[in-house]
Image 1: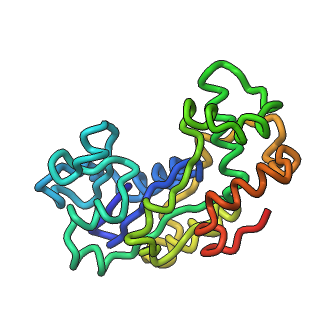
Image 2 (image 1 turned 30 degrees about the vertical axis):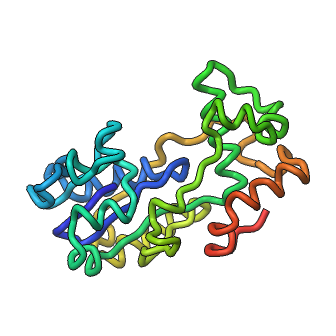
Length: 218
């Protein structure tokens, strides 16, 4: 999450979507004025970002905003008037590709890059419970089930989407997107071959809202 008063924007930082790259570019755009947003002091500087920590994640009005803070939490801390008037944007990714990326990340944490058992594991309730593998970003950029953003960058067109954001905040040419935290999957990003009909349908059920809202297809 990053807020700029100078450029009047709110960036909701989603997971497994290239948000680290965008966040870094926006921080560079804002110069050295970026500070952590602390509770009770929503404008100590031009730009503010969320931080890690369990307390921030669950009690933002007391301890400040988490880096994946939800729209509801940002609104509560920033105030309704400013929240409504600022340009709000986020990033979303094809849910089938995102699930495989998350699986790859989980495997890498345990010292493996083998994706052979992806289809089996994603269909296993036990494996999903143990590895927190059902990822949805919907509530980060939505309030009461409705997206509250002005623009959604699609991960599949990350550079073009970022350029559009710069145009909308009147900062064209003032920031450069450098890809960070890129996937190291051996399949080069091709996700379709990893799915069976059953696992494909499972992800479609989990992420029905994102698929319908942003026109994603398998």
